[in-house]
Amino acid sequence: MIEQQTDIERLVNTMGFLPFFANDISNFSIKEKTPDDLWFSDEKDGPWQWKGPVIIDGDCAYGKFYRNKAMYVSMEWFPDFMNWRRSHYKLTTQERKVLKILKAYRSLLSRELKRLSGYTPKPTHRQTNPVLRLSEKEVKKVKTLKHDVQATRKKKTEGFDTCITHLQMSTHVVTADFEYNYDKQGRRYGWGVARYCTPEDFFGAERLVVERTPEESARRMFDHLRKLLTWATEDQIWKIIT
Image 1 (tube, rainbow, N blue to C red):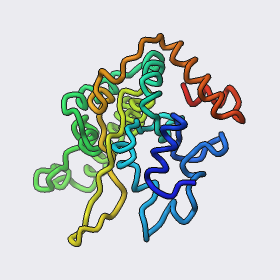
Image 2 (image 1 turned 60 degrees about the horizontal axis):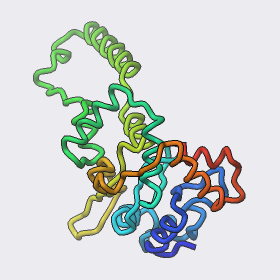
Image 3 (image 1 turned 30 degrees about the horizontal axis):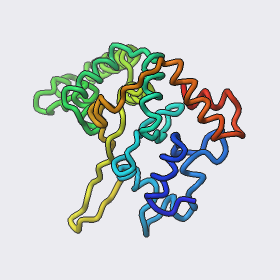
């Protein structure tokens, strides 16, 4: 049972793979191993607040690695995990663009990466907005046109959340930490904002090298998880790896 940060670190390094949320494999998540009164608590920190410290102190990778949801992977297994995933995931043009920006800055908060990648439009100043000088009928036409353009753009451009999730699923991006806002009394509030970087920048490229083929890495992970999760089906285990 999880009662403190070090319990998560121990579980991650013992199991190698540990999802944050409950899933279709029973007893294979931090949620199921955490007492209800610690999962969300106003009095004390729990797994949600420990995410960043576990990443740093536990020497493990964290990101949306498991069916587009969060999972920890120990550094004993992450190089094999990356070796397999990168050989099977193909990046879109938009994902390569976002990854290039992240590599250039080495580390960015989610909102910073989103803005630099062109997902956050610049605000329009009211005094220079021509819509305000149009008649009511013309305003309606312009708004309709803007709506159509935005709808077309959304269809053509991969959304930021989809993009950053796929970059994590492909192991090109990991979460380095979570940063919070603080009030005047120094009290933390709100949800932590993810800070992203590449595994190479976070761990060092030399720690991610494996002398195995992607297929050998996949088989090594499968054999480990088969012994660990004896109650899971082969299909469920492959979904962790792929």
